[in-house]
Length: 65
Ligand code: SF4
Image (tube, rainbow, N blue to C red; front, side, top):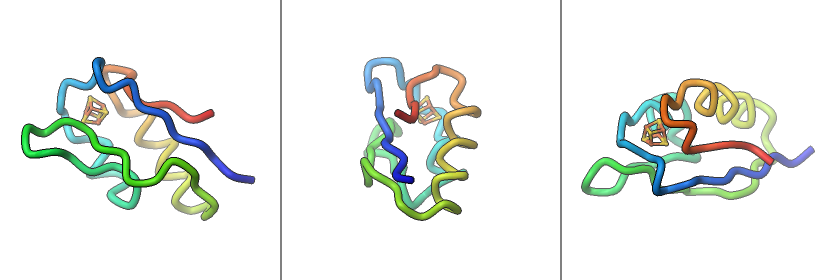
């Protein structure tokens, strides 16, 4: 099952946890704020890392649909 990822960019405070946990999907711009690399994830291993990243974002700026 595909997992969709969404970002509420205005909530992001640039902690970089998402990019450390799941670099396949989350990158950081030059100011350290999240950049989404993929909106739909097929790979269950990557999807698991996305869920870990969501759980570890202190600002609740990322989520799955
Ligand atoms: S963990 Fe959350 S607040 Fe930190 S860079 Fe990622 S989306 Fe932004």
